[in-house]
Length: 136
Figure 1: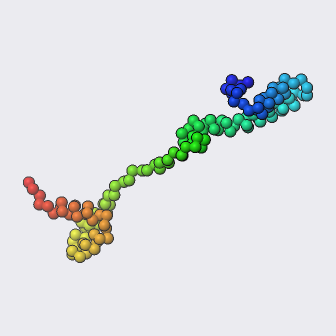
Figure 2 (figure 1 turned 60 degrees about the vertical axis):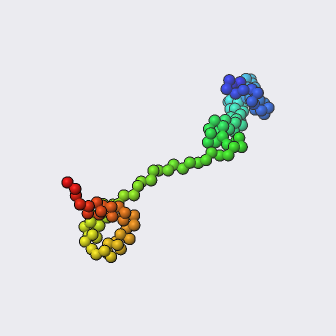
Figure 3 (figure 1 turned 90 degrees about the vertical axis):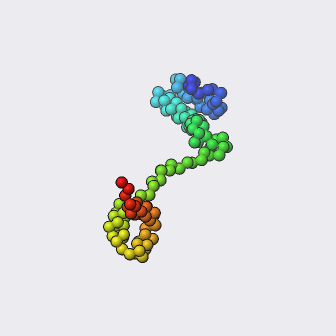
């Protein structure tokens, strides 16, 4: 028996197949080729039957898959969130404001700022800072 498989963990069918494989391997009847084929077929059948146990063993070891066998709720999936970039007024908008808009009348300035609501507070702050008297 394989030292990694506990004999008490095998089903009666698996034990029977193991005995058939062992008997086929040591059998003097038939050709060497047929003995190998019979043995290989029996071993492949055991491997096929043990594959489910192996999958369960692997899934039980992984907390992300354990819930499939324990009846627990699946773990919450936490989406990877990228940090939100803070909005910055584009330099072209600042240049347009100071290059053209401030030279227009109040109505035009108000309309232009209304069309740029995300930039309005920042542009007004820049304008106020620019218009403050310089202290020496």
